[in-house]
Image (tube, rainbow, N blue to C red; front, side, top):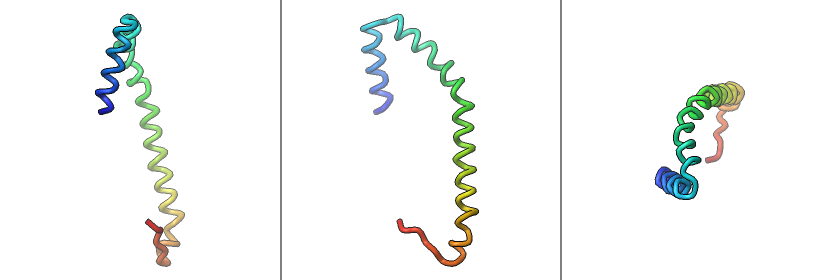
Length: 69
């Protein structure tokens, strides 16, 4: 559904201003490639914080504490 809305928005932009729509179509892969390292850094930090949380909460889990779900 998200991609369909994106396609409709691009078609509307193409009708209103075709040079900007074509520029967006050309620059989108370049922007995606430039943002890829930042996504990898975000995934790495997510994993790091999950590991720290697991290490810090290990003593409580050993004593039988269970988080409410």
